[in-house]
Length: 268
Ligand SMILES: [Zn+2]
Ligand SMILES: [Zn+2]
Image 1 (cartoon, protein in one colour):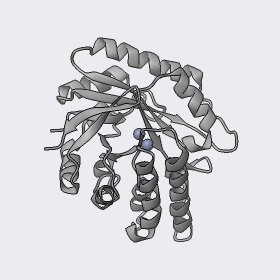
Image 2 (cartoon, rainbow, N blue to C red; image 1 turned 90 degrees about the vertical axis):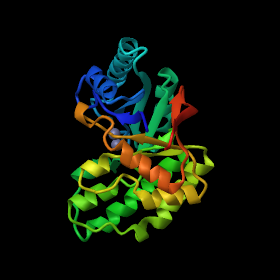
Image 3 (cartoon, rainbow, N blue to C red; image 1 turned 60 degrees about the vertical axis):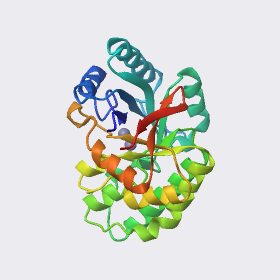
Image 4 (cartoon, rainbow, N blue to C red; image 1 turned 180 degrees about the vertical axis):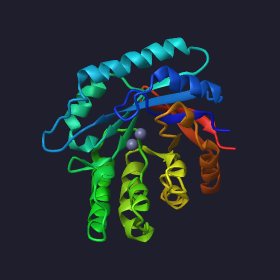
């Protein structure tokens, strides 16, 4: 049984739940390990957003330390962060990582040219461009980003499905191979993000096909995260993720401490 959730939000702008509530939910679900990975977004063209600044980072860090104390002996809480578009601001990312010694970093692509994927207009005309830009950004991130695992690899499919578009896996296969190749060559990993199950996609992000391909190309490093923004979603669908891992031939998932991979949970 998987007893770790490596992707949850608390005080991120789109969550705003006390970190304690997320940790309590993790204990109630029988988890032994939780990586709290609040958002930090980077922007293109020198743009900065009010929310993501030093004060916010400090607030995240202080909450993490407080929860680590409070739940000591009951739950291992990893200091995580989900960096969005970190390939766009490599120096800024580096200085944050220097200042805050995180245990685990997720690298994600949420935005293209500073517009969130959730706010784009999906039409017959725009969809091919959006998909291509998404994967071009993901290739950049996988090649140059300072992360441990890539978050929700094929996130764009969630928005396609939501807007009634078919997900044509075959069109993305070459891009995905390049991303996976970069991840493997750099000794990094991917996550299975189970939020796809509860957001209408009907499968995790990535789905089983991509997970198998990752294995085929030599990938071994995987974490599993619910991407919960509310306590009731903590640890959601971990058993479905475990089944995917078993079928794709992964014997275990990874844990992280101070950005070093340590033995994690066995896949049963
Ligand atoms: Zn994300
Ligand atoms: Zn997230």
